Image 1 (cartoon, rainbow, N blue to C red):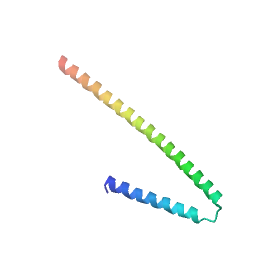
Image 2 (tube, rainbow, N blue to C red):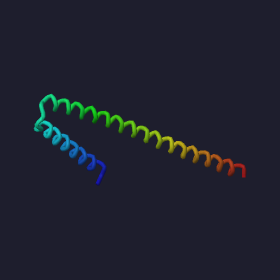
Image 3 (spheres, helix red, strand yellow):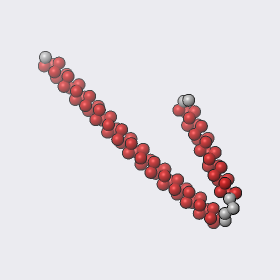
Length: 89
């Protein structure tokens, strides 16, 4: 399955879950004030979770970049050493 198809299917699934959750909230036997409070709390929790996930992804990306930089620096150093050895021989 291509990346684009996966993203489209995930988006459709997420929208379906959201619509289902909204309908469940609207049809629940709670008062309007309780429902609004629940929605506000749920949205705040979702935003907090998304921010935490973004921070984790950022940290992972930085770690990956640092690993790649280290690997490239090692390769450049080894290449320079090999060049100097070949030149001096």
